[in-house]
Image (cartoon, rainbow, N blue to C red; front, top):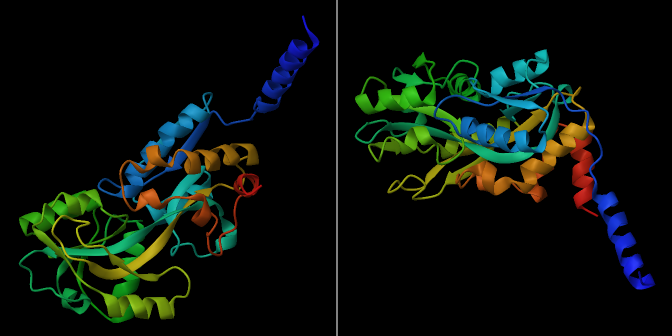
Length: 299
């Protein structure tokens, strides 16, 4: 064998050895707390679980349906979930959790029947409204809104899909949904709905609660023929239990930000997941494994 050919083969062997992934001590089961029926959390979480199952072949990855953010934080704190999706605003103590990264933003959406006289937030007074399922981010933020602006309504707690059905049949005056856009629950109403503008409430929230609330506009045609909607957005984070190994969280982080097209499943808002904004987790510190991955891609 010639020296040049021997050199090429040796170089290739060393290259392959350098690419061999180190052995990762992954858990037998990895529970990912997602969200309720009719919410983007459920769909994005399910797709992420499938992608992670391929990256961690010895691990059973379980996408756990939940009420969403508040319940997810409790599951994470108790160790019943190792990964969880959550909006930023219910996180009381940012130091108590660790972030994999910022994913996309949820928008507060107040949907009412197309012919409803409800035109502003204060018109919800005395009305039958849904604040999402018990333990959801919608319940947390919706309750905060009602209390802050002094609006008293007849509140019911249910999944967005159920609230959508009841708005359509007329047994519910309005549904609040803090979720990504477009959300399946509102898309399913097929134009028999309108969204309530809340620009004043959005500005007041941003002034009063510094950090999680961002005045925002849902673009026109997000829901077919509906016009643009003035509201506020809240960042969503993927969180990891602090005890989860840095090696595993590094794989989770890499999967989120390199398998984005597969994970978002066609959701325009979720399609904004990217490395540049991924590290913008507010006061919530990155998990060591996530920080390691973000450093590696900056080289």
